[in-house]
Image 1 (cartoon, rainbow, N blue to C red):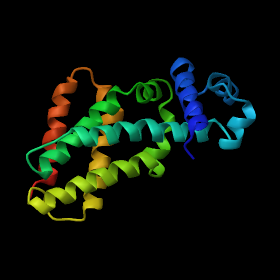
Image 2 (tube, helix red, strand yellow):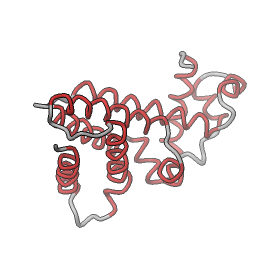
Image 3 (cartoon, rainbow, N blue to C red):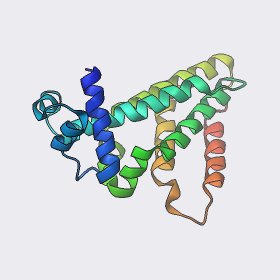
Length: 188
């Protein structure tokens, strides 16, 4: 359900998380910031975790969709690799992602260790679409595009979540290596 009230609730949640972090965000504060009653929030979301899931899906899904429309390349593999790198860059710079990684990284553990979230499913679908296009033009190796897309997700989410753990290796150098790995993994 996406309407103006839901968007206001998600915007208010984003603002509260960026200001105070996840643990200190309450549905009462969200309602106040959104200009709606607490009951309006509770009718849509049973708890803060539910609104946070929708917020992450919206924020990261919008970033991926916008990037998918902007990145181009000479062939399907170059487009796929370019879009994947652009998504990694955007998520590594995203204020909400940075706040979560900095303050409450355990929120991401279920999506890394236990199950795929909606954002991850979207990422796999976008990668699979680009991989299938690359297979059609001969620039990507044979294989199930969804499986290859999932492998790409597993590789890239580690770059989003933990590429900054070693300050001695410049981020630009890691990105070059990620590009090489992705290109090699998809090449025929």
